[in-house]
Length: 497
Image 1 (spheres, rainbow, N blue to C red):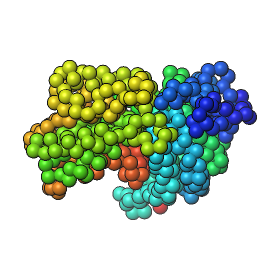
Image 2 (tube, rainbow, N blue to C red):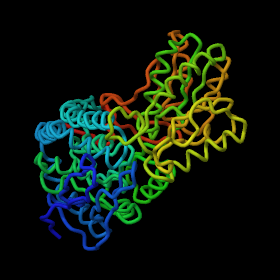
Image 3 (spheres, one colour):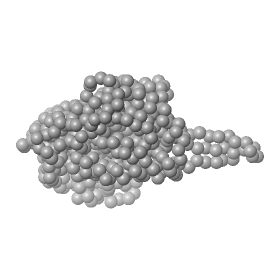
Image 4 (cartoon, rainbow, N blue to C red):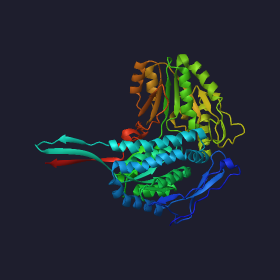
């Protein structure tokens, strides 16, 4: 099964759009291997539909081989000191930064975001490697008195075993490293399954992990279809934890399947984020933050604001400032200079956003900017940034995750009204509040049933903070000290001296 030749992706006629050669699509036990079958994953440029690569696809046999390799490597890896486990993580951090331009180029080609955004994602992902290389050295235990003289109870944390990491296409670089870094630092071994739309970013990351010197079997990669690879990882008894980022529907399924074998399952799922602007807010700041949070990555983020709620007395002013800026956003290929908004991941995503817009308009919504097919760009791949007002409460755009550059605005009159509206959903990932009143900021933030609340800001991507939601938005945390604890078991020793 050993593969010694690189897999060379197909090239565009425009050489700025060339995807680099890759070593393969399956990395098991420290080697790039060829699958037994002939299946491949077709990787396309979402902006053009052009074929970038055909990545060898793993099947059940390869997935189980990866699990076996991880299980075999676990005793030695978990037996290393925290400093020893941190060393290859730090080397990987240096290599990611050294190869940031190449990683960003690949990310833009297969996912569509601008080079500026892709570079930001690559450097963000690298920070998890460095942070957890250091944080594992502070994984403290406790010693507490027992009930008799000479008795002590020692409480410490230990790794779980083999962890399956299943990652999404919208942030294929950073989400992979946000899972791998704490899992590996804690002493677990890993089998990663990236989204089938964006395997190239994962392959390039694993080339770095190979070069960083992780022992064979500690890190394993199986690119493939979820029906085969995902199923094998979920049912393999050696896999003790599943970490998943993706849709709520799939998250529920994975939790149910993991429960059959009592696996630890952590899921980071979707959100319908409210963005609340009070009359006393700095409106220019709120507009700037809203545009950055909503239209980055073409709106394809689980924490992108989905419902903007503006206090009545500043609604018209806020709407005017917002639409003036949104109308100037530039669409285009992510490799083009000055592009603000790239394509959606696939035509089905564009169709879904169009359906939400049509539904809102049919219920009385007003399009204040956008809404028309983009000029000189494929309307099957791009969606013009659009703002709508007068949106009926039962519109799909207010109740479903949009995952696109469509933004509905609503009016509110007081705190109780806006809290009820913001909490009137089954999701609870991120929420945003803009006000100059410190007391109100605390009241509203504490009243929001969400895992994360930003006040006068619009970012949750900090490596030192626990990212995650409540209710239908998931279970578990990624990032911060809490992100490390997710990959550890607690054991106590009863010692009688």
